[in-house]
Amino acid sequence: MKSPRSSTTAFDTASLQAHEKLSRDGDHWTVTASAGNTRRLGLGLVPALDKAISVIEFINWQRPENTTLANISTALDITKSHCHSILKTLQEHGWLRFDESAKTYALHPGLLGSVSKLLGIPSIEIIRTEVSSLVSRIRFPCVLSQPMPDETFMLIDKFHDPLRIEVSLPIGFRYPKDASVQMRALLAWAPKAKVDTWFETWKPTQYTAATPMTKQTVLNELEQTRVRGYARSKGEFTDGLMAVALPVFNKNGEVEFIINCSAPLEMMGVVEAELSAAMVSTVRDIHLQTLARVPPGFPA
Image (tube, rainbow, N blue to C red; front, side, top):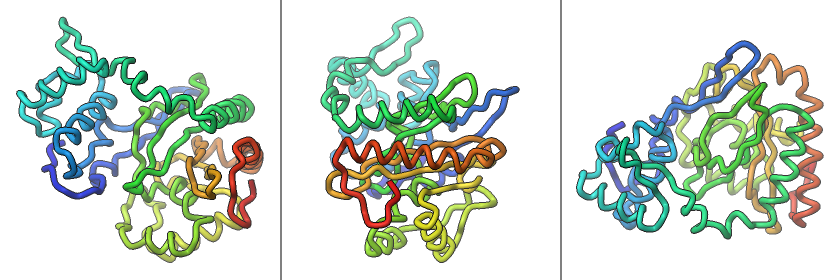
């Protein structure tokens, strides 16, 4: 993709329209995404840092054979010399490694050392433990995403049974702000002022034939989410995929994470009541352990 760089803080929503795809091979289902969907337009803050982050995100997305200097430079609109300097700098800091024979770059575990404090956040470990237990009981995949400042949702962890349904989206995948189930989990119990602010920058995108395209329809879905007690999307973001989600609140009553379980419509529809009850129970256990403050009317 060769979008021009600019000063906007928004995601390139056009690239996000090919966000996910549900495929089947016998009894095995896979949720995948096209490489490059996390490409963001330039933020216009510190250009060199912005480009370095773009390089890391690009490499995280691509197949190993695609991460040559030429490919990275072309895809990100960075001159070869500048791109090479960025890559060498990231190598020196232990964030990338270079394969001399293939002339390709890959993320290096040294990157984890620089963010090791994040791996030790108590709430993350509690959530991982509880969601892993949930997935082992329900045998449906779940992903953990986090609302970001630009209103997207970043996938930060995933839990699945690879023999049945596999989520192949990479860690760092960005769901757009109106990804149906995450958006509903975020806004259903939010103050009216926050919901109104969200709509100010919303531009409807037709992800599937079932995607809600009017403000009133979205508001109706938020109301139904509160009544139901959990967020739900039935083929509205990805054709053939049904998802159920709940927010995880922090001690300040803010949505810190979103737990999303998904499966083909034909499978999820049969177990929706059982699965949603199990999710509510799991989120309740997480909130009790993390001393979270939940809004009035929230079921967990």
